[in-house]
Image 1 (tube, rainbow, N blue to C red):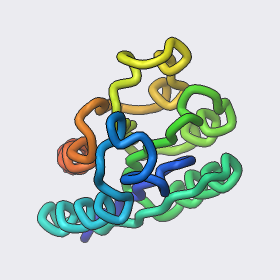
Image 2: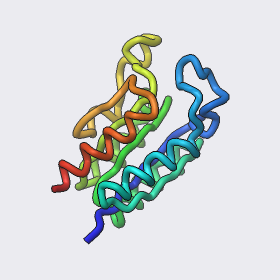
Image 3: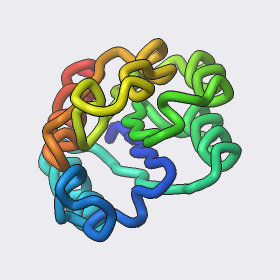
Amino acid sequence: MTKKIAILNGPNLNLLGEREPEVYGTQTLSDIEQLCRNEGSRLGLDIDFHQTNGEGQLVDLIQEARKNADGVILNAGAYSHTSVAIFDALKILNVPIIEVHLSNPFQREDFRHYSFVSQAAKGVICGLGAQGYRLALAAIKDLLD
């Protein structure tokens, strides 16, 4: 049976390719989605890909994943550093969670050095750009096997 992976993306990631390309790269979120779908297909994973700018909507997507996903890859963007609500939603999940960041938050402003998401995640991949999603898919596949 094919495992379903929810790939959830938070605020401002819809502006990838335009927003601070020196930090986030030139690939768009659509490019990253295609990368994830290709890698998911190669690994035998079904990809459910979403992006929202709203904190409550991201909580809703996490809660939906509770019922219909075998694993979650989450780039919560700035909410990683601020949202107890997202942390609480993640704690309810009984599936592997991998946190992804395009940039390396530890090379950035001090407030980015702490992540609520990391407290709920099995692993964290940061600083490798869009390839972090590909690595997260490989990791989550290994965790599920």
